[in-house]
Length: 420
Image (cartoon, rainbow, N blue to C red; front, side, top):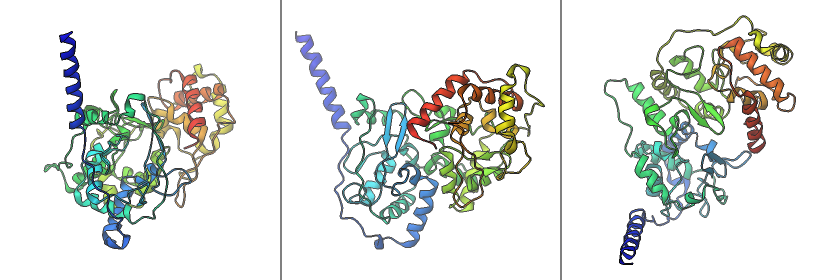
């Protein structure tokens, strides 16, 4: 009996110590600052930084007010809904001081002391300078205030207790500014700062471990973003034509490139935002990303005709529905990409080409970019599988496995989340 009492005391003492060690202080609310109190140049710099961070994409629902939150971010542990980051007093950042904002960006802790889920990528934002955080704060606090209550996050039961995030932080949060490499150019170092910090590119383009943290030993080896594959940005990139700094810069600024096609899925709003950013910053990001890709020879993977094992259905569907755009010789953005140049056709998994075929590509707003109708209601699973296998074997190499299951999964995802 005495033994169990001692064990119980040890457990209680341990829980009490954990509770005390994971109780961040509550930063007192402040009276909301007037937008007139911020320097116009500081606000302008914050606007550019917010575009690099793609803040509006995550913190805006489809058809909703900018930065008012409520957009669902799917994770393996449940859906996390983004918060309201307008200066509303009751539901947004209206009572947040700059000190509270800086702490949230560096440590992932809200003004009232609760832990933020790392779906908010503070593990990247912790690398930002205090000056850049100040500019972001000035920009957000000068936006129109919108009242929009936060939605409950339907995450796994244990994760409802946000203090468990403190354990995740202890394991994976590496605080500190992005280090500079004296052996590299100023352009490269600027790109490393933007890509690894505010741009949080690795959040999508790096695989994650079982606890949802990035596998840092496989940085930029490819990941998953909102149901889409985020292609590898290292030497394993599936692009048939090697990326260059110039082609990366053009793609990031415009959302398309003649040798690489269109930005799609979660990448499309990223390029829309980067189109408003200074060319020098986008070029710096491309310089850093390009340095992570091993140089390789330019190669167009093209077969003169599909293998006989594909049968005739795929070829017939291609001729009837795809060839006019993708085989007519019209250059991008007016015609479809030559599939011999398509990363989606050459990717290890067929997920993206399935989603693009079913959902299509919407017309871009105010810029040159390709567009494509969706075929979700016009093609059967069997015909789609035959078409994609035909494309794979004609324009790439090994066939894809389990196409039927992948197509069914993609159709379910589109029904749940809607088109991209």
